[in-house]
Length: 509
Image (cartoon, rainbow, N blue to C red; front, side):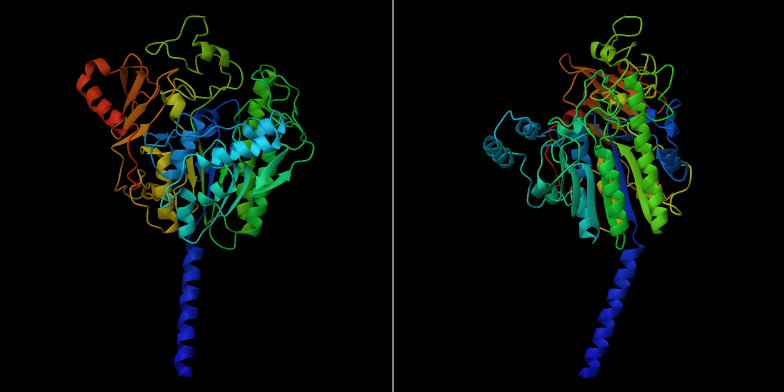
């Protein structure tokens, strides 16, 4: 009996050792999720004014996607990422209301009133089904540690238990996305515990005006993004002993613009306004922080076994320069823009950066400028350096891809498709017939459907029932509307799009 027990203990130890070895072979995963950053703001996608060497390095040493889609607006974009469902599904645009903590902190409501309102908010705030599986939970189920730093949850007002329900073992950041419009919050949250930020006293977190002409450093003393990068680096140093999934939904470079100091590249730039200098400095800080993360991976000896992904929630947004002309839909010469031959473009309307890179529209638009996003993935020794992919992909594919990376089954009913085979240079067995982008705005185009063959249907005018058709494989700037020549194709794609909008979720019973 003693010999049997000893043998059994040896077998158990051996199995445990093999399991540990297998776990250590699985890659760590870091997803850096920029805010309102169009592809055109990155050097590897054509930016010429602002240099982004660290993000460009990810592309140079990894794979750059050229046909990748997010949302058109912050909360739905995060919802589709975290659920693995396209945002036409029920609940994709059901974000709750933010701002309640600001009212309390500003003395507009009492603490008692705040607690009463917050309790009501929790009770009716988009209930989560018991069996719903979110992005971070996929990693948890595979034995990974999970951590989130920045704009927590999918928006707009959340709390500790809800963030934990989304699958985060550790979290640090903002519970209220309206407070994220300022970069100097009086306090942030870490695993449900509030911690104060020295020198920050403004209830609105130091939110600046749309003009962005406040003095550099306006708002407080402790800049939120410096808090987050310090937290990320500390987390990596203390928690890299087992596989982890780290998600960093940063505020950068969402406006209104605010920065502790101007970057030397722009401080004395002769052609930039103060707001443009601040915005460019925010992009540079984002790039610098990517560099700090990459350097830390090398220092810790985990660089080769860490997959780093970089993307943004939606298309480009202006917090400087020609924003008034976009709101008014006027061109440089004062003529009105239209949705046919005179679409509003950063490349033609005095955006010094051309942040949308020639694409039509901005955030909230149904055209490419509102929804096409950067996506760069680096995994040394696994992904071919300097490679590109035109595979049709979207935020909601990341959940399935993460499942493949960590060795977990994709939850049933999810809309996403794993693009890991493409990353590894293998044949992509499963591809999208179409990608759906929902949009409840109608300022410059609305909802859209992109097909695997390269066609894009845009609901140009919802009230008038006007749809346009583009071949984005050859016309990514959407200059030539093909709808009149292909009415049957327009009707076919329209029926698919309308079927998918407000459709049931196949991942829930």
